Amino acid sequence: QWIYLDSKFVRKEQAMVSVFDHGFLYGDGVFEGIRAYSGNIFKLTEHLNRLYESAQSIMLAIPYTKEEMEQIIVETIRKNELETAYIRVVVSRGPGNLGLDPASCSRPNVIVIAEELALFPKELYQRGLRMGSVASRRNRPDVLSPQVKSLNYLNNILVKLEANQAGVDEALMLNDQGYVTEGSADNIFIVKNGKILTPPVYLGALEGITRNAIIDLAHQHGYSISEAPFTRHDVYTADEVFLTGTAVEVIAVVDVDGRTIADGTPGSVTNHLLAEYRNVVQTDGVQ
Ligand code: PLP
Image 1: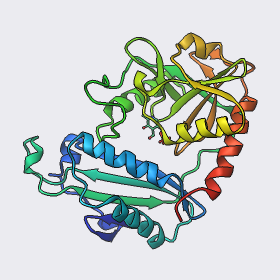
Image 2: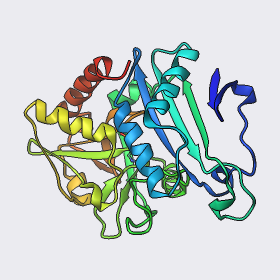
Image 3: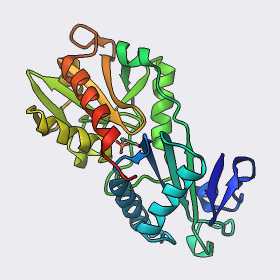
């Protein structure tokens, strides 16, 4: 496996980052998770835009243009002879001294990893996930916007730990007002009386690229879909609940805080949107 690291390709075993890199010392950096299907990189422009916006927000100057970054990503996939891949792009502040001031870091570190995707088991899509609400919150949007995919993902890790402790597959995150926002690394949708709802991102969710693709697909297929605040009660009483994300695509949730959702099996809207999504990703993307 070849890793793009610090302007060159190195073998996985040699792909080492300095212990003085502020990405390591302080979680100072940004990242993206992207997928390629049969040679097409899905929504690459959207992922690059989000990466550069995250970097802009934390005053991190990525040392490549978006076009150069696109080339690096395409090259990384080619070099690893992959068609279908999970791609992780990391831009850290780079090595500096032990003080937290980024001024000591002379050059950001750009890393691109492309590997065979570890697919979620088929059974999980057939059975659906169990979710539990957690106490941990993301940072308030006025402190650190949830739109910044920073290397400091501790809040989301705490959320995942809480879910693990509770013995559920995924965490249901709420904001300070108790409105549902998202999962630990995925967006949430509910279906009630034929209407699909997802929380507006201003409540504190990442504007997921899969989320936006699903909103588009739902419109195309004539569903009523809107962004609207909802609470756990609305989730408990929904006809269907599903999550979206680059890695998971679209997956049903069949139990939330011990409440069985409808008949406890993945619903027809969820299954339909998953099928349409899997269709679109095969043909839509950067070659
Ligand atoms: N929410 C969070 C907190 C995430 O980290 C992610 C993905 O990384 C998502 C949602 C889903 O976003 P996307 O569909 O762009 O992968």
